[in-house]
Amino acid sequence: MPQSKDETRLPPIVVALGTVSLLNDIAGDMVHPLLPAFVAAVGGGPEILGLIEGLADAASSLLQLASGYLADRIGRLKAITFVGYAIAAAARPLLALASTWWQILAFRFCDRVGKGVRGAPRDRLLADVTPPASRGRSYGFHRAMDHGGALVGPLIAYALLAAHFGMREVFACTALPGIASLFLLARSVKEPEQRRVADAVVEIGIPDAPGYRRFLLAVFLFTLGCASDAFLLWRAAELGIPTVFAPLLWLALAAVQTASSTYGGTLSDRLGRRTLIVAGWLVYGVVYAGFALARAPWEIWTLFAAYGLFYGLSEAAERALVVDLVPFEWRGRALGAYHATVGVALLPASAVFGVVYQVFGAPAAFLMGTGFALVAVLALPHDRDLRRSAPAVSLTTRPS
Image (tube, rainbow, N blue to C red; front, side, top):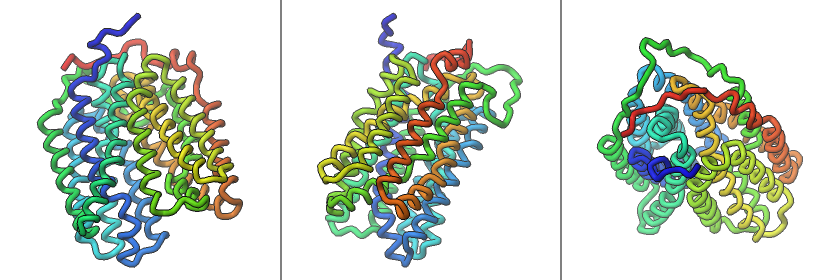
């Protein structure tokens, strides 16, 4: 049956949250490309950079569980989301004051804490205000706006540096998009009126849904093969692409991510979540095999563009599937557990990838990632299992 216009159009709150994410990520991506050089400028080395990013990402991942529980326990999704964005908006400009690596660690840690606080409540808010028929499209639009920050942020940072701003001044300038995101969130996003079961007890844990738990297992296996994207740039340099072109590779990746995410989410509404996830993970496996076998610079440019399709096909479908599989009252915890699963698997993934890369070479490391992707596809629950696991009745929000 064809979907009506009301079922497929993006709710105003989704558009507002996407714009908030764009502004926030513009600020974040003004910082990220400069962070390695800034760490080096205060006397830190690669091991310090790894420590900073590892601890910060670990905090973000583990906090997703707590914030997801709070989202289900007390509601107030907008308030929790606002706190998360506010922590990050306050921490980034303070990097301008850092003079030692441990101060950078403290501010970066706070930035990622903000991400951990806002992630699950914001994703639940997106689900609560979107009809099931367009849930994938809403998540896809949000991911597209998020990736848009990776396009705009580095360009702004480059323009400021070209205008003879220092790195500290660039960090201070991140306050502007950060404040703008908070203003927009406060003015344009309203707390949804949720119909909740009276006196319901909100338990701590993971929903007892076999399809959901098997999906988390598949996500964990897939993420074990997901190394930091910095290794893609390392491989590009090995194959003769000058360092000066590295930002252009990154922008090409971000452009494809931004262009494909909304459409990928929409396709998951039409063709099914599992179909898009399998397609995305297979693209990932093929691209990693390409990085293993590549011999010429032009192949790297092609692979970076194809890699962006992996994000566009799978990210929105994964989030939408999480919401599809659990009851209304479990959405926050389910999304929090999903984000935490990804984060926990990422911690050893890059370390193992780096060791294999160093000892056995790039082809072995990238083919290992391909292998994990294929195993994860096999571990995904089948459509019949997903239909059997999905809630028979889903509580929704009142139209906003």
